[in-house]
Image 1: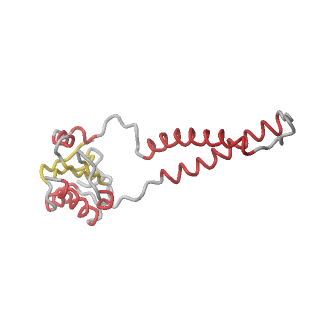
Image 2: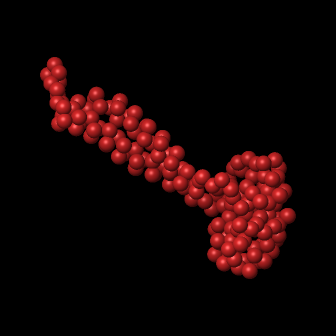
Image 3: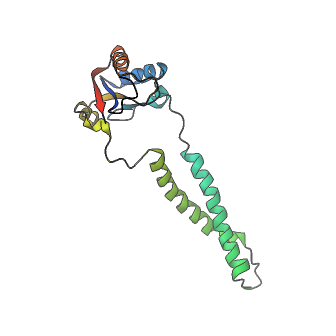
Length: 180
């Protein structure tokens, strides 16, 4: 079988402790696998580097959205006060950017918060109420004392037998095939 078999989601292997999982992630990355994930009951320092993950684009996306939110907020106030309904109060100018700052800031924060939530869900592929890996009885240990690597069948290097042999060679135990 190869990566074209649609019934197989991937291969799951268990490791003994966080150090083993970290080393296994580095070896998996170095072996050329790109569609794999590491599962642990707690965050492991250095795991992102070991897996070869790049920095999230979320900050750049939200900065871009925030820029347009502040411009939109300031433009709306300018249009309302200078064009749509101009009122001369005590000889003050129609365009008073100092008065626009609180509304522009508040609108920027509100829109950035909403878009951060929405974009984060989209980048993480959520909501996903069920993941095929949940069907593994061994995977129940991940919330307590289990450390796992799962290599997905969509990986270009995935081959069922060769991937099982690879995971075994780097110290994986309880290696199992996960079906969709």
